[in-house]
Length: 430
Image (cartoon, rainbow, N blue to C red):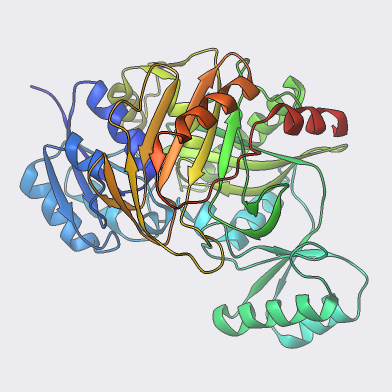
């Protein structure tokens, strides 16, 4: 009898996870807030609910007799759901609420790195008063990244000199965060190429996934406001053309050190951990540590994965990580189709998708939409993740561009992601 797997979340990342669960021979039970046509079509049964309603999701899981649960979105990890499922005998391949603090509290993450002297940390300050902000921003020449300590969906971090043009702008934004949250992080501003390293972990061991890079800025040329992510790339050697193997190995050592530190404190982390790093002359520096698949980067790596994904989830939940997932030696490019105005004032509409869209090298994943596979209704968030697969990054980008011709309606996409010009520029600057 196949396993019954509960998946929480209704975005493009969860669509990619859902497909791998079903491909592994398991029955899928999904809990999501939007009527994602792909996830619903894959599911044996579906609960449409507020994803933060942990009591409703727990009741659904118990009523359906699920064997294992996997939680996709970060806000759900900051609820008691994982702990409640575990207490009722359901295996969970996602971190507990306490372990998820590595993402949900940036202050906890920074303090952990400092406490265990883990390499890769950056200078930071926890400002708890307007006087702190006055001293560190207005009375100083230092530049910072201004961060809320909690979840921001990739949109709350603002960097002086990029998003914040003047010191007064930085002071006002930091003051807004402080008044709302009671604390604001001011982190040393550093420069370099960012990259994402995701791993599977059982709390002791790790299994790395291919390196990825995402593009948060809304407009081409990496301009405009931050978003949840406009697209992402991976390369066929599982590195990136501008990130060397030594940098990757040091990033993996940092992740392992974080996992070991958490375990030593009795806060074992089981699930997907991903580090967002920046390559610098001093080695990789930690921008964030996150407690789940990245979105969109997780879609890239899942699109080239093979093997029994359900077995991997069980080995994570049981604390017995074993190799059951492989990744093809292919490059991928993902470009998100979003409503016009996404990142500022989105204007949702409808999109029509040709029925013969997908092939071996072109995939489409459904995100914050409802409707059918051929006719979707957009929300104000990301709509469709289009993925090209090829030997080279820029060829994968071309595959996406050809695929976009099969999507009809008014939408916006960053066409520059993964192009030859973009990649060669990054290489020349690295």
